[in-house]
Length: 427
Image 1 (cartoon, one colour):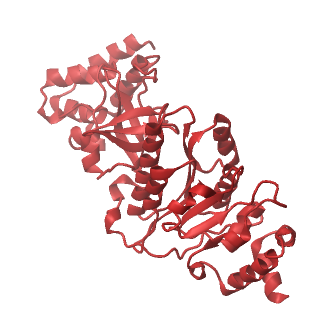
Image 2: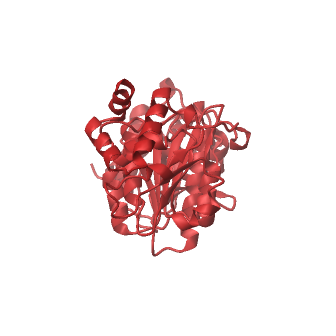
């Protein structure tokens, strides 16, 4: 059936409805304030939505939802079918498809809440410069107590002037939006990291397993990954992101600032479970700063909602690194933000006091690669490791003082850290 035939059919059926029936149908399809409208106005508003001349309004602006026994579900389904026909092929000013929800996620969107003055929007994408924008009405901000940095999954519609607007919220920071509980970040009580992120499994790279024993990472850690001259930290960060995901650790976000395009591809393929956010080397400092601000706000929002998140950053320098570090926390009330960032060795002095974990990668050409055991450590590591792990780490540090080749061989031969620790405890 053609769009015109569908419209003619639903027009005839709508005109036969009573004012009470029309108001219930109007609520179902997204007419604003249907209880205030007379019959002629309601018919025009319903048909305007059916032909995509007007976007459906958010639920909060429609009034009470219709009761299942009080509206014609078949008619509403045909109105939505008409919307899909009239919306097919249309695009907005940015070239985004004109999409109307058909219940199969065709108009789904996911992004972080950002602000521009008093207006709010979702930034949907991995890169600030190319991300799509979905406007967020104040009614959504108020109803769901949204704040900057929240990750919202929902559905959007396109208005007559070509703007994408959020029309339904499905989740906020991974939780049911109506049941979300949060506590302001400033009111959370910081504690020493005391819940270890396990990284000693057999599937992890040796450098990551070395980290697990000599510089363990706790939830809420604030760690520097020092890179000597000529050593890139990105390959290690990729292995670390993969390890955190493989061991069932917290949600992991990887930030690449001033990245090469091929590095972006490598992270996508090498750590597919991690969420990626990046800028490329051609972008200016404002783009780098905006990316860091956005992820730092998201990390704080996760902590406010009692969730754990790990942020791995490569390329953050100066003020951008400081912003990420200020978001790190292990909250006594629940929730944590773990931040690990690569840093050139010559720039580390400015952040040494803030970091509570330091890991140094070996120089290029060093036998076996991996981490510099003598220069890698975590403050208060007794809160994260068992007595057997502490003893094993101390013993292996002694062996490494005479050269790290034998220690690396022991890691390779043992298969995983548990076997290594047990062999040293029993032998």
